[in-house]
Length: 526
View 1 (cartoon, helix red, strand yellow):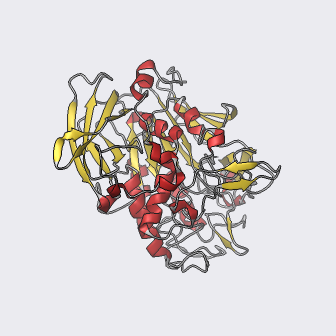
View 2 (cartoon, rainbow, N blue to C red):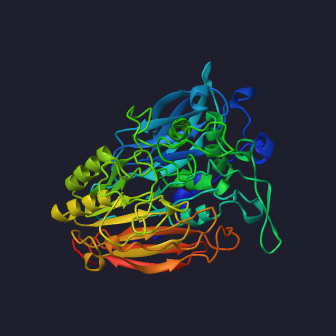
View 3 (cartoon, helix red, strand yellow):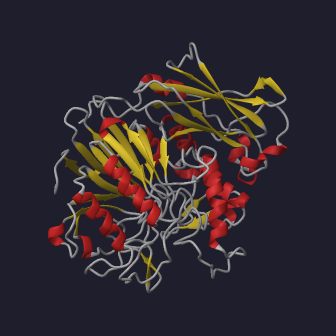
């Protein structure tokens, strides 16, 4: 295993100390969504913290939000004292992006700790700048000696369980921050745009769960302003802001960024919505998503506007981020004998096959926003994910996954494993053709984690088409258990720089390791 200790070094802790103070107004629910343009006095402030994302060997994205119009300026240094800083002039932050902005840092040294601070300057007087907000991240090393450690999970502020001040907010993010990962992979459901946050929820034992609330989170999100408010809500949590300032992210999306179980072309039959066209809602959500997360393939970085992408982390790891939401066909019973669209769409599938074939990394993590062999229903007859409960030959969306698995086997692509969240429990599945109806693939693992701050749900059934065997599972026995009743979960991947061995640990809130699996590089059928 990597010999790097899972706790922040003194220099990382000190660079963050005192850098994330939040304006008092943010702690007051009624003012949390106040229009930044109305805050006219003083200097620009960045009360929502900073984030870094899609970090590579020589580049990374830095994000900030201002409380008024401001010019974004980023300074970087090899030391926390910012001796000989390098300055980057970013965009003008204004109402067209909800006062958010991202600056791409290029030409960074590989495998180094980068300290950065964001300054917000008055656009009419550049000498007037707000208090700098600091962060740090590690660039990807060129060699493999340092190893790689990252975390993954998903599902935040779901089922009405929001930021509870009595519990210290999203405290699992502080626990994850102390693991000192190289990055965090968020597997989707970053928000629950369809899940209002109420001030109080009575638990089964009669106690009361209290939520910090905002105007935008009091109803389902429909307008662009409401989607922006939903993304902004999580940044009221101090634990998450500290985490963001220390741990760069790789973010993908799933259904709850828009609405439960949505698919392109869907027309809603839901009285809560005045806008019934899901395509309109999805467009507004994607715009807010691109404004609130540093994602390299979304505007302004890439006008093509893709969530799916590959992030390369040196010779040990490539992360293939999928989008199983934007290009899928309609949810159905999933028994079609032909299905070219599937859950990925033809273009994304071709991209994934091509990029997997090109990859020379020891490990190829397929970051999936939905599981493969777990049966996720959408109503009484339709299905939401890949599996549809029929253990026979592939049908419906399974056909596309069968094509991908066949490609991986025939091209002799080694080191693939699947990571996901979505189902609100944690489990490990091993897929093997000896147990499967479809046999033209090489064995592989799928690991599930989450939620981070949402309700827990019972385990779903397994579909035998690809021969899954559940090696571990932990799930509540009833639906929508609160974070006060059942632990929240995250996963950890540690790749050893010497041997190349990859260790997966499924963890729960409180620090406990529930399950460990060690995978050896270059081997098939582990």
